[in-house]
Length: 397
Image 1 (spheres, one colour):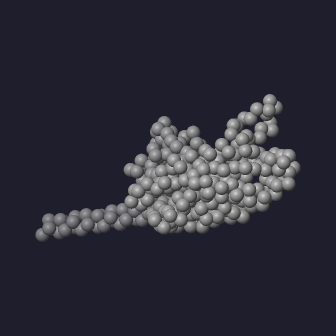
Image 2: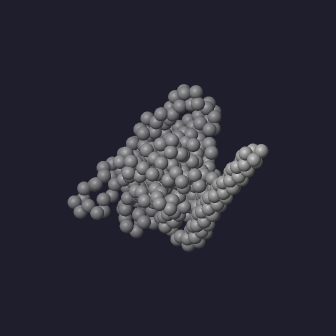
Image 3: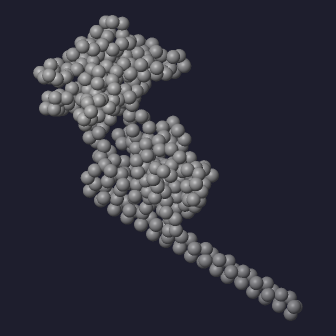
């Protein structure tokens, strides 16, 4: 009986000790969780302070470039960890080439990148076509190697995760930020969705304000300049031509048989054709030239300091033209490039595209009294001639 009592006491003691150990373990675990919660709260407070500070900075940003630096630096600060900084790149939409082009970075520059531009159909940007929301890439995605050159990707071995953040202005993705970050920061930010979304919304609003004037002068469909801006710029070029006695040329470009495309293939296909023609024109003119959608299927191109056969070269004392051609050569080149364009219907049927082009010229001294409306009228008359002569050709005075 004594032995049995001793054994019972020992079992009781062991049970009590086990209970104390379990309780102590629970206390330790609760303390650890509490500590992690405190750290998370501290992180959140720090990052929320970044958002508050950013909002104040964005409000005071006077120009677009300063604004973009504030955006990328804030995202860089939010996505860094206590021990490891992040790498961030900001891409903005260039409507001339219809691609997102690298604009600025955080701890990163263009020399570190595999490529400097992406289409929305390219990996990994194409995920944004469906979600249009912040997208997370863990260490298994190999996201870093999609962007960074091999040596740089290996150098930043701790930054294996990524976050892709769209900047949406007026329901269009105007920019994209990619951030490479440490796994610990990635886990925290993925858990706290509100933080990054608040930051993305704030940055999008600021970016929208910065590009408001740009959007106001663009044609929404083709992303070239609109008719109102064309009229304003042509008047400026006419005034400048009168003052400095430099020629100015105007091309009026009309898509041949455009109504047939809408009738046979639908208006969506017609819209795609307008977009592709606008892109070809814009990518084949000089930076000083201006392409605008004049109306319907008609485009206008202003060629400053350009007469029918040559570009002005006011800085070349030898009198030789630094660039051959002029308005006629440019018009013929654009016609050829558009005719070569590969355009297909939704079922793969090829669609032939041609344009007719009329050229108007204001040159000196005989063009002294040519006003804006006169130049437009002349280019329109030459366009009408091109249509009458069978289309897919260029006519000039």
